[in-house]
Amino acid sequence: MGADETSRRTFLARTTMTAFLVSSPWFAHAFPRREGEQVLPFVDQPTAPPREGFNLLKWEELDSWITPNPKFFRVSHYNEPVIAETGWGVDVEGLVARPARYTLADLKARPRAEVTFTVECGGNHGLPWLIGAIGNARWGGTALAPILQAAGIRKDATEVVFVGADEGVETIRDMKLKQNFARSMSVEDAMSPANMLCYEMNAAPLPAPHGFPARLIAPGWYGVANVKWLKRIEVRNTRFMGRFMARDYVTIREEERDGQTVAVETSVGRARLKSAPARVSRKDGSYRIYGAAWGGAVDKVEVAIDGGTWRPATIDPTYSAPYAWRLWAIDWPNPTAGEHTITSRAIDQQGTMQASPTDPIIARKRTYWESFGWVTRKVRVA
Image (cartoon, rainbow, N blue to C red; front, side, top):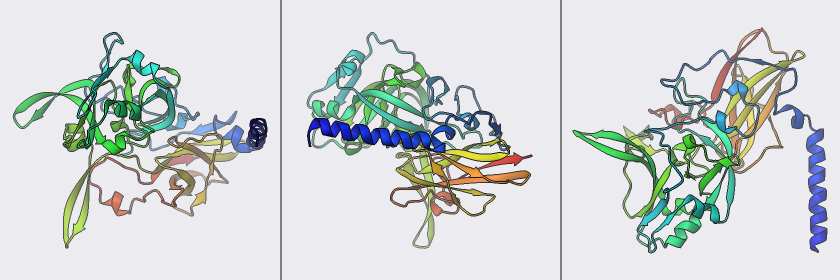
């Protein structure tokens, strides 16, 4: 088959798909919201956060696949450094044959990469006030793996540590020590072709609160792994045991071992399959529930009203990317007046179902990290 014929068939396939999507009610009605619809506010609104600055998503206002930069949530653990491009660079060092330093201009001169990735805080839905620490953006930069390959990682290396410029003072026993925020992953995980050194967010320079001049973007991992304000990438052959790997962002679950209950601790890492209702709307007497699902290769979403039968939602076909959330909607015919609960659960392409509250992986968890069980919201119909 010649190039012209291939191009013609590709054009026809895209045209056919576009025609199908435009004719589908979901093309017009899922996102943005339907013209003239009225959004019913959830009655279980979160409590106020302990401090300002998180910029959390208001689920009822979710009306686009991409989260605009000013509306993207932000979490910082120490300070939020403001770094000038002049003089900045990220060092690649440690167990490498060829240490190197990359300026922002150096990164931009390398082959460009882009990924649409939904970032969720590892504590999202784990605290009463923390239910909107999530956003979806198009991240632009350059692939990390070729940079590590160029450095020549030694054979005895096992781990790659990403160190940010944000810093704070930690008290360890009777010592006060200044530390930078840092996270690590295995060499194998760091070499994933999806990882990038990111300098753009939604086609704009990376905003200062989100890590300018450059940050790590690790698609498929919770937000804590996506280190901002990068200053150093260190390759080593011992485990990194900093606060945010070994003492904080640690999930503790109880398990039975030989008739005894033991606590098992694991560091928060890869994102988990999850979904959540986003908003309920009414138009001309008809009701519709919207939501999002993420954290895996989402194949289906099901919704239950007031703990009843699970019904399949329709996943909007116009928005799809391997690491991005899927938007869904389901009609809610003839709801009775009063308060109702709405619960959603996601199912991935391998048939794995989002964990229920009674699943031991959720029920026996003793810390709020990785709260990926079913999300239930309450709404009142007049």
